[in-house]
Length: 486
Ligand SMILES: NC(=O)c1ccc[n+]([C@@H]2O[C@H](COP(=O)([O-])OP(=O)(O)OC[C@H]3O[C@@H](n4cnc5c(N)ncnc54)[C@H](O)[C@@H]3O)[C@@H](O)[C@H]2O)c1
Image (cartoon, helix red, strand yellow):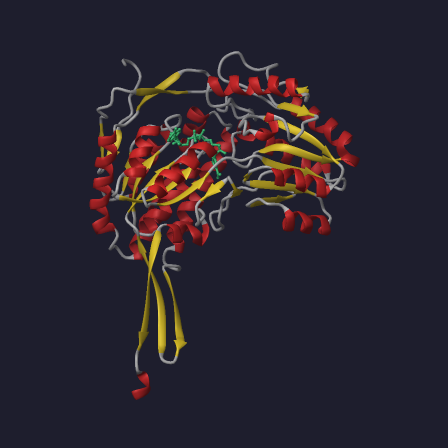
């Protein structure tokens, strides 16, 4: 393993070599070049990280809420000083354009700010007069060690949905970033050290199935926050709850974007292109299916295809790039296979992502298939690539029915300026995150984020006040003070 840097676990404030004999390549998807090796940490290393975090919790769990908030505000400041370096690191290992990476960094910073702010406001509630002379208070306490498992597609934003809020609430953390994008977490750890994080507060191990099982089965881990694909999220939820953990699992998506006859195409077009092809379609809010109303279909498609053809493909490091690569060669091949599956099932390829792509790296051009039906795999499966399935619908009702047929109901978008249509959409669509005249509604730290049906398993969502609730448990104290005798 000469020449390529090998990442280390981060346990109790120290970088330590993994004793594993299994490593994976960290690859720049724009070039195929191996840029580092990541260990698949052993179960013993995970257990050690959990034990260290449990020890650190004995102190951190008793710290005052202002102190916890201040630590996170310090982290926020350090992050603000390093935004460009963070964005470049995201692009290097994930492939997304620098513009997308910069946006991701901002959202991570906002999540830190939100966690730091909210913790002093929402750690309990009181009813002063619940009954005659009776006061009821709901006190919130941290739950202990939190396990965080994150995906490759948002190596900064998703960890920041989790660990700042967990730490603000008084917990300690073992985080396992995706083995495909581990470099960003290494940088984040450096920044937490600069911010003054105490030893053991945040620990990092790597790997996939074995180490995730370690997190799910270790009795010291009290809650698990997962974001990733549906099959893995389902497993994490089932295995975690089997081991009596509190689990939230945000999983896959197949978001439908509805374009109605009255849509303002000048406004809608760049947003839909961004939703479909931004971050190479590797977003849980990607516009994977377009349902377009009959009356505007031809005009919309003519413009959409023409503009998709003009998208600049290349290394995300180049500021002019709009569409970077997908994460791995297998993902590229899998996407090409879906084009063939679509053709075999009767769909029409309007724009073929196998054509006009750079030779090196794992690129897929903007891909558009028409005449798609809900029986086809290209509609059913989350392809997670710059691949759009288009369905012509007769009206909004049909569009909503199509979207509601899908089990991966993370988000949905509507392009219309008609108030009645907007209300019908909002009231009848079965999805968690809605965009009105927006291609992709970005997660906002101050609001919950999660989908419906199989896009989310668990009870309490990420972000917003729900985030704090997930990382705490309550003591409700009912007290009678007998003040009547005063
Ligand atoms: N709902 C959301 O908010 C949201 C946000 C971001 C990403 N996602 C989803 O994440 C997916 C893309 O990320 P990904 O490809 O990294 O997901 P993934 O499910 O392959 O991996 C997610 C995490 O699980 C681990 N993992 C992988 N295989 C495992 C296994 N067999 N057992 C245990 N752990 C395993 C990975 O190491 C990683 O840390 C997409 O499905 C996307 O929709 C969802």
